[in-house]
Image (cartoon, rainbow, N blue to C red):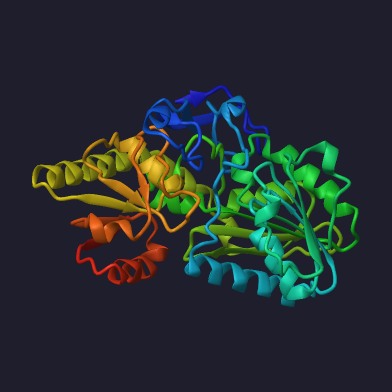
Length: 392
């Protein structure tokens, strides 16, 4: 089906609509304190449109006015040892590879500023971050030469901010006018000669390849493959130093510069034909996956097997809302203390700490992210619980 909306990455006006959901929670990282409030959480819609010209995919039914990136927005994965090890390795690599020592670091969309603080700590750097969900009291104390956070959306008012590293992790997928946003960030980068530009986003090619419907949600309005991300930065007249996959292939990283000119090409860029083919078959494969998971939940419910999910973030909200789960799911486990005791938006399933399993043991636990399966298994063992553990 041809869509009329223009591509927010390259401006192409002939898009292909291929996946639609009429009612999904508008937020998946805001948990709510009461079941009634959670059940009444605002919903929106999504329709994924594919751009055949550049490979970018967007939710053309995205409504930014429905979103509230406040301090209640709990996006951090920083309570996971597995994720922290990844972040540490990533920060150390940036510091070493680009000589980020005694420098100024600027992060757009810094969240709770954990990564910003880490780069500052490892390189003795000073940092400034901007994010509407930033919480100054949660900025790590041992952050190098110091970290300042600004609670605001990054826009033209903040292009005077800059650094030797201009970083933006897991923010661009929340932005609708992606080309304009990248242009603004390059204005910031241009204020520091030789600035390194670092972006990280989820890899949509993995989502398409494996019919990962639980990684599609309303506030993620922009979806990049490695190639479409590289093409965006090349159109913005940057030179690419790096284009690679990280976190077991779940994230795409691009590192670029405005000053140093290279003509380096990357094999990951050549993905347009593959993306188009996957888009074509995605609806049928997702429908099959949804029906398979529904059948599994219904079968467990009939057998009175208690099922829990592990991970109370975006994946859980999308998984539960897409499947329309109710009493088939007992609870959701999360190690983040700021999520415990709250409820998933839309479905109103309770989010409990790992200790809950000892008093209310499940028969089956579904890990929302296979990267964490060893960590989850260890937590379950620590509670003295024996159950089946599977991953999506």
